[in-house]
Image (cartoon, rainbow, N blue to C red):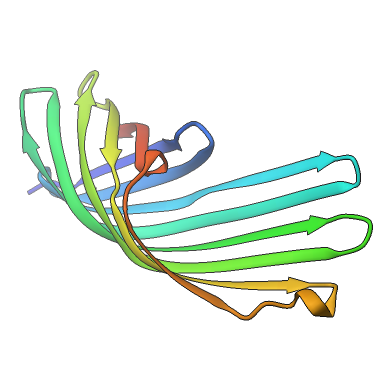
Length: 166
């Protein structure tokens, strides 16, 4: 069977952006989401905050044709991420770093505008483990590592995509 390749741009609530690459057979594809992330910088008076984060994921998706132009998509991904946030004011600097690892479900649709151009929408429920480290320039504010488990989905779990098939 001929190989299918797709590449696209992804949007999460139009605040986080990324790229997606898929390869495989027409109804079973390996999927790779890379460079999905964000960069934020804020300043208010003497307070500044700079944040950076990214996620990568790899997984498998299956497709079921609903019509000639519409496919139902479902699958699972292994995902990982890194986030850092540095906040400064006149008296201190606080740095927060988080590393995550988990599984992401994939439920959605692709609509082919023509044989090569598509738009998609997916809901990405997640089960993940997150380790966070907080450090401060003030010794009294030092905090130990924090561990967190996240399950479910929210409005950041909605992925919109635009791509081409070749």
